[in-house]
Image (cartoon, rainbow, N blue to C red):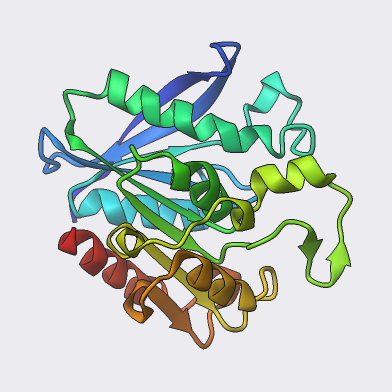
Length: 238
């Protein structure tokens, strides 16, 4: 098995006032120029989380450069997630710009795929959806509307909810089927499974763009390899 190579990087965002910690994964067999995948962690996770690392390494081993980054700027914010809950969403375009500006010698045809689960999926289907520089979007177990968590109201405020909820960003268009793949497990206890159908409907996605698993919970336990292979099939079609 090819060894994974890792480059740790610091990505300036918010007018260079804040820096995000990230890691670029690849192998000695990775082409000099190839597509990139940005792996965005779930809520309260970082680039070293188990789910993130599993898929980061899987993608790297099949020839992609993969950037996994910590959405929260760590010590610079005192790890205050609530204070930065929606601002973290707006960091994504700056991360994309950083790759295009600083990794131009290693990116092929400006091809960038966004991959993320839960909170990461919401970032993808909001800021990522409207950023045409993101060629492909893969969102897993994504919440449709942050006005509620399950049946419980959360006091985020209307403006913040609009900033972070895919509900307010997604538009139906046939081209979405060439760009977007979503997936969810029916027994996910964190994000209601019905959110999958709400997202599918608003995007106008075909059935083949929607992966459904009977079991696996919020982390696709027992289905990760199948999920990975289905993602590869989708990426290779593009």
